[in-house]
Image (tube, rainbow, N blue to C red):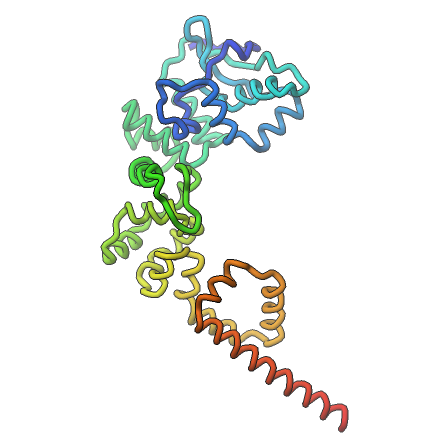
Length: 339
């Protein structure tokens, strides 16, 4: 394999249509157009790279391409190529017609994939978790150029990390994608499209045997978990990792989880400990915290409280007790002044 550094016209370079950062966006990879690729990359590239290239009017890190006939195909640098095309389209200051490139003459698919591994799995410009899992799946299950052991060795990770990433990818692209694509998802924050940013929810689910045991006892399965994610019931990925098994096992918390969110259900499994901690706090600290809370009211929380006679009664009782306490303070202050 020979390498040659050269500035290339951006119009002579085609995007990598199998880049894992965009593959999940496209239903039909065979009919993929540059316009669709650019739309997908636009979602991915907002950040420091865009600002840096625009500020310096160019990129210092050349893209990597391979000759295909009379044209070139980028196999490392899709985003940088997109930004050059985008900046030229928008008329941004700078010469966006030519882009620094390293031409890899005679590079085969296996060598190109190894370069991607070193650049985006091991290196400093790492792909996001879902893109990595997508790439693992391509290399092992589609291309069959790696097995779990060899890929883990090349990527510098444990074999179990690769296996869990593959399991996560399978659940997301089969179970979760099927549920989202029904267009019948309802809930507090329903997903209207496949969301790769939910990867950590699924990864934490796959890794946690206790969650799956708790779900089995409730007669629940993977589809139920995917539906919770799609409906927006699991407020944070950390709730899956740290709390979901407890939320499922607790009857009252599970009831809230099924109809609302994990954030709203959490106080039910920590209620005793929380009340114990609060009872030790100075009264003035509690009153100050309550004032801050009331100064920034949450309309959704108000609506939930309005539906609960018990919660309204609790607030009314606190009002009575505070008024009684304030009356006592006033009486004590008066006695102090008269003595």
